[in-house]
Amino acid sequence: MKTGKQLMLQNVIKDNQVVHQILGICSLLAVTNLMSNSLVMGLGLTFSTACSSFTISLIRRLIPNRIRMMIQVLIIASYVILFDIILQAFLPEVSRALGPYVGLIITNCIIMGRAEAYAQKNPPILALLDGLFAGLGYTLVLLLTALVREALGFGTIFGYNINLIGFETWTLMVMPPAAFFLTGTLIWIVNYAELTKHHKDLSSQQLGGGADHD
Amino acid sequence: MTDVPNISPLIIFFASIITSNMVLTNFLGMCSYISVSSEYKTASGLGQAALIVMSITTALNWLIDHFLIVPLGLEYLRYVIFIIVIAATVQLLEMFLDRYFPALYISLGIFLPLITVNCAIFGVSLFMVIRGYSFIQTVLFGIGSGLGWWLAISLLAAIRHKIAGNKLPPGLNGPAIAFITTGIIALAFIGFSGIVIIQ
Image (tube, rainbow over all chains, first blue to last red):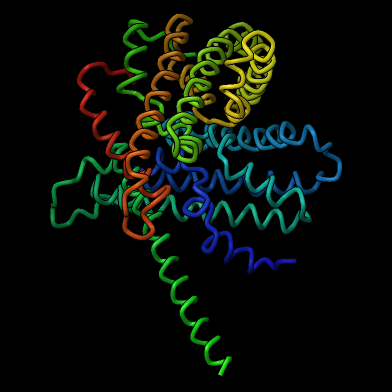
């Protein structure tokens, strides 16, 4: 049984759903041209993942195996609708800017992935934490990408001007291609870091093994 | 409900293939776009399945939206209803193809059920509602988006096929290079943006 802290480390950093599993990419690419939109989107996904994981785990023994997908989708959809209505009521401008992408949280693979892989085999509190940290890991990647795109594309961060030296803003950064380039580069960096670490582990193991043999 | 935008359905059709491509400008259906594009034949199969399902479900969802959801004031249930319509359509289509077009059914294989969770299908329905299209516009928008998705995944699969035999820097192979390739394709597609525009 994992503790909350282990789950946090695993879901936010070591096994980040976005860069390792390549899940939930659609919204990652679509909303990251502004920091504020990304933050709202990340919170929405975190909320939906945590709540639906909790609910699914709570009733996991009652769901017949054959129709579990359908039930999971309905649970997820209810939470997303809830979030959508809250957003429309309190932040109508952000809701308009995000457009269909709030509704698309339903088909975001992260939520379904956590439900299938974790929530239906584990107790509710752990499932809640698992969903929460998976969502936070997603938010982290979202904010990182948005930071680069907004700072270079508009010269702002969260709408505050940081363009003090007056550089020419890089319009491509807020257009679709840059989202692909940045995500690709991010995945590359993470993969590369892991490969080098893996190599180091391997070589130190071999050294250690040799010493043991002697 | 917003007013029906005054755009010729044909313009919507071409725009949804080229300038408002579902993958390259709206980023929808990325999960399967990246994971199924390593082989050309399978990618093309998934593209065809997406085209068929997208054309049918978008039109169906329009009808349901206009004759059921809006008159009954059920807007808050829209997401759930759309998802159920898509899942049901895929299931029915599977049975229908199995019965009457077994060759096509075998060639599409596993891709039909996969389509249910493809966010491009759901996204097209949501866009259609948000932009307030008329029925004719919706039908052409659905077909155009499907064609655009098929075109995009075939392009990527063909390029990845060429990349496959080459030596890449460590860590770049797999999804990373797929993303960067898609970025370049998207960059090329921006060149079309003067032709037709819808938003």
